[in-house]
Length: 201
Image 1 (cartoon, rainbow, N blue to C red):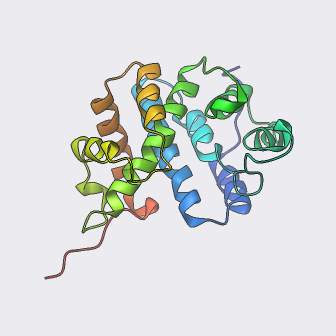
Image 2 (image 1 turned 180 degrees about the vertical axis):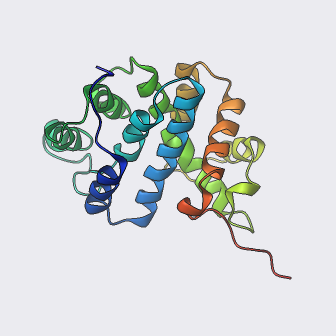
Image 3 (image 1 turned 120 degrees about the horizontal axis):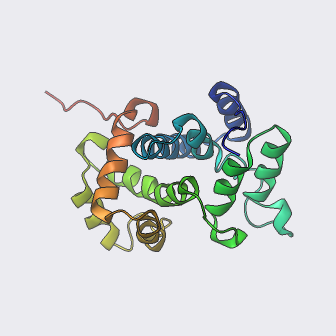
């Protein structure tokens, strides 16, 4: 399965942008891509292959939200069907399916576990950065994210349970996991719109 050739990132990015108008959703997928690529490198896996799962995991979300009448018409099943037609490998597709609880698809590979583990967390890190005076991810650390996690009213769309469960499934300490993902996002802060604004003189 891992020998299956993968589409190049440029064509994947073009497809993601074609389907996704929302700038915040595009940046979310770029955040998840950065985090899962970092985990691939750390675990000795292929960052290009893992990166595809991160980059494309929500590409169909705007057009096919999970409110469809049948499961095959909703996110992420619809998107996975399109990606399969375009030759995306099954391990990437299974990871994408596994990031949503309601698909019932088990997360059996390290790639699938990593995608689930970073998905909600990147949203929480982004929200934490955007309430900083600098609006910069460079001013975020695990402690500040953990503090915001305790505030139920903050970024209430982010599932704290998924963040905790994701770290457990991946077998990493939660604080270490948070700091690792922050580091991955810091490495491409400009692309994520999280490089911040310089302080006034």
